[in-house]
Length: 244
Ligand SMILES: *Cc1c(COP(=O)(O)O)cnc(C)c1O
Image 1 (cartoon, rainbow, N blue to C red):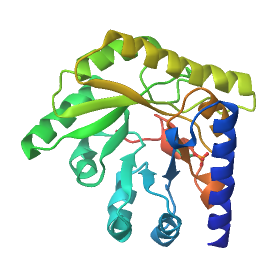
Image 2: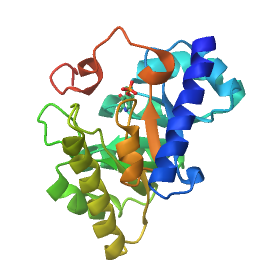
Image 3: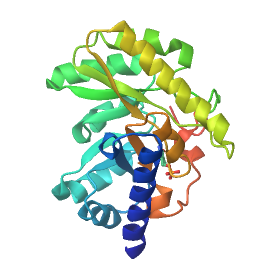
């Protein structure tokens, strides 16, 4: 637990420093705790340190953990690949789905939200690294997707999300985040009804500084707070390992 406390302070210091360098106000960037595989007592400990935002990748884990963390009243986002048969469950637990990347899933989501008379915030996940294995709409199809989803009235688009290239080359990573920023600006200039473009969710344990430099408003950090996971990220990110 001491590690978590220490790690959180390291992350906040990194965020503050990155904001200073980028000439941004530190309140413009929120820390989302990426809590996949992390047990509720550790999540609760982090929340007791003053954190307010968590993100889960799997519906199974949402179900298992949300009751145990809800007395701390965190804001919960879904950051994993959403399958249509899991929609009913996801909307019980989260206020924002950061990983909407195709019209078909948004339409199914809309249908269910209408039945339940609920509304939800979403981000559009964009595949800025052009890796075939990664989820996310292709950058050149993002605007068309946003225009279409904007017509679904129980769904509110708040911005964009991406996973940068997993690489040690900061310039390659920077290109990903720059591309997300560019799409954000393009969408903003179109003034599409029912679309707000204020949120950019990008940057993780290893690349949060670059993301903040390029305009991130949410960074999603797991490993640097909770330590290494037993599953590889491919278990969470790759199309091929996800059963449809
Ligand atoms: C796991 C995960 C993160 C956090 O990654 P770390 O490298 O552990 O900080 C961020 N975003 C998504 C979508 C994730 O699945």
